[in-house]
Image 1 (cartoon, rainbow over the protein chains, first blue to last red):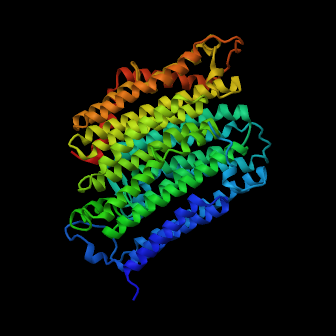
Image 2 (cartoon, chains in turn green, red):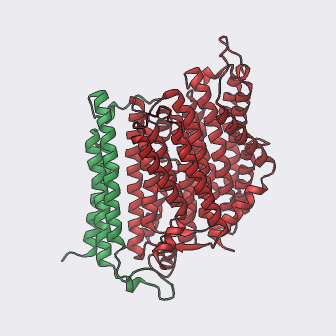
Length: 116
Length: 489
């Protein structure tokens, strides 16, 4: 039986792997892949929360609310995260191309021209 | 509630988006008309900004506070304060950009359109009251800025662009994870409901809540360039064009603080987690590391980069006050400080750019002798640095007095003391620049020509800096009504 906790643990693990990748990879393209992995970890959490949480149980009766009856916010949130991440990576790959044309290298350790 | 109402609430943003699109189209198709001088694009953008300012003025006098777009945006005086500030910063940045383009002669349309779009992000962020809108608005501020940083197309700007992009992606990942945890605890993405849900037993005192708040502070800390999320600041400032740095250090920071204040005020002030302690530590660290880092710098942009980290630290003093009874005072002084800092910093960058175009160098030592060749420019530069340092009779001093007063009222006198000591440390490097400007050099630099528009802007800005330093009441009254809008009472 796969429960809510399993999804959250999976999401946390994928997110942590992404951060680990960003911090340790030296190839800029691999860093962008790690960033995508990070965002995918977040997406797993968002859609699973949206699936498992019952807003009717969580809702405070006293509070006037504009919240819809089903917790679709998480799924919508995931869609926005995907879109924005795509924009981010498109921008990033453009810059990586620019760097590659100038240096013939996409190694992050070569980026040392700005030093005090 | 229907969607039409919501669109009315976002009228200033719509005007700016439309202006940005017009600018892009004109830039792409003006070859047909054989237009050589592209300065008309800046005029179009300024007209768009004036229209947006008028709509902001209409909304300020209209029916507010008002919530719209299914509760995801809130139009109140707090939001309108930041919208006007963002528009003002954008207008001045465009004037700085005009001089920059005149010298560098490249990439006209994109710069203007991206600046306008980033301003739209700042404006949306100031009224966002829902986690998805907050996230999208933050990215709307940052993504155009990354493109602007990298658009210089030389090695240094590409490098600073990629560093900015990777670190900003990391920070938005952290912010998002914080949002996910909040959503998991409460089942809602509306900031106003988060607080109710948490207090009524969903996750109060839980480790998850503490983690969520820490992740969110990390995400916002990057945006306001606070320690330990400040690594990108010196590199990005050094590698990118001055107009972009001017915008980055003012509008982007204002956006960070706008959402910091609104989210923490509406969602976390009632919650029994001592997050203010975390912010106090970050504040002290930012002040200290920013000021100590600035001392050793020889590049003026890097120096201003470290100084901006220190100023983020001062402003965070005001954010820690949120949980205390002096919260209104805190928010009010933060707003005052941000506005004063923004215009002071824009003045500083404008002078620095004009001088460095002449000396062809961003090294502080090459600024020697400016006072003999262009006494007015030197005087305005000194005025802006005096204001950054916080000496009378400038807006910088008033801002610091209000901030530290708020901290004392909230029984955080130690924080005010640390801030004061740091201001003393900062005197070293600010006064060093002033000393160099007024020293004599063997090679007397020729007179620096400034265009009429930028000289007029500099005059208005410096009069503003002095006037608000002597009579802070006007801006303070506006900041006060804005602060009451989010705190109530």
